Image (tube, rainbow over all chains, first blue to last red; front, top):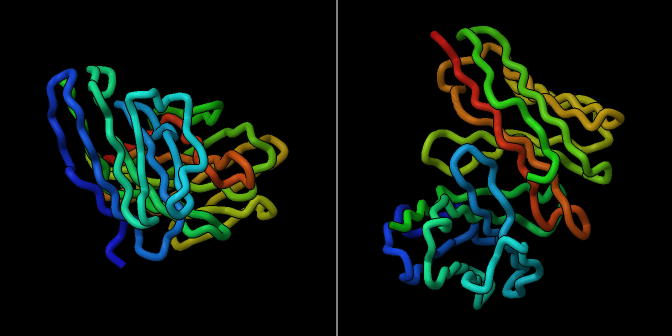
Length: 114
Length: 113
């Protein structure tokens, strides 16, 4: 069990560019979550998957954001036409679909949009 | 996030006890969780408590839950400098309670040597 991994750890991009982040959950975990965290705040829920199905999306997830989990294993989060307001830490977490449903977080991807 | 409230800062001396408080709003929460975040890192799960419990102890950590007042606290005994971090409580929401976690803004714990 190597824990949740995320790549890249840091991404600097120019406004208007597209970026894609990857998350590899703990191998037997069938639930995968994406959160966004800005400075001085707690993580905010973006979306979650159960296996390959995306079951809920936050209103924070604008049309420029898309997430996939094609084979129910790793997930990608893409942001199109990035804006400066997208600068944040993007956190991925995974859990089993059973009590106590504790979520294990990856180290995050820090996005800076210049 | 949505009405999970925490005080922002706590400063203690090494060896003292720390108490971090949290209030939440979802009375149907089945479990409540505490996480620790060090600078530049993700969140580390510390402990959780089932809602039919009043207290849970796990080594230096003690969690107290007052469901009537929707108040959760985390006590760290014999606080060490390595405990300096931001601590978040998490309140699960959504169908079946576990689709997403709502986090407070976090309490920054500073441990002075």
